Length: 160
Image 1 (cartoon, rainbow, N blue to C red):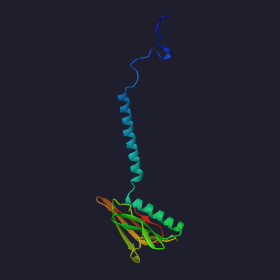
Image 2 (cartoon, rainbow, N blue to C red; image 1 turned 135 degrees about the horizontal axis):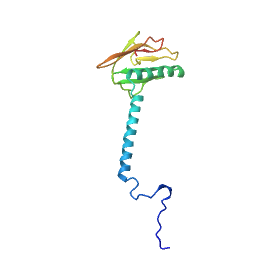
Image 3 (cartoon, helix red, strand yellow; image 1 turned 180 degrees about the vertical axis):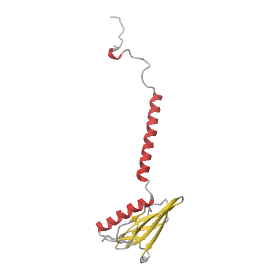
Image 4 (spheres, rainbow, N blue to C red; image 1 turned 180 degrees about the horizontal axis):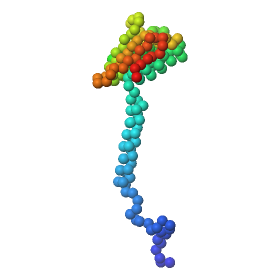
């Protein structure tokens, strides 16, 4: 009974005292996985949030038009060089958002038809689904300009 107790090698063979991972190996593995996951998140975010100004304008235009019809209220878009602001018409007149949705491209907005009154948004959406007529151009150096246009009766038509 003086015999030392030794682990039974069992079916896996003798145990190597050097087996296992060192702390450095585990740290390097976790760091590599972290870098890869950040790369995946950034590339996915860029794909989802990297829409161009024309696509963003179209999405916002369509959403505001639907909101005007559903809420039965006048809504609008103010287009300026620093970005796009959403506006709502209330008892006190037009109120625009304070934080613009910025543009990366150079944006040129042209109203078609009657000139809107001062303080009126560039694009006005009515509860009946109509809007003001306009054309907007998005241009960036080195790429062809892209255009969107609305006659006020039909939907927004944009270049592809």
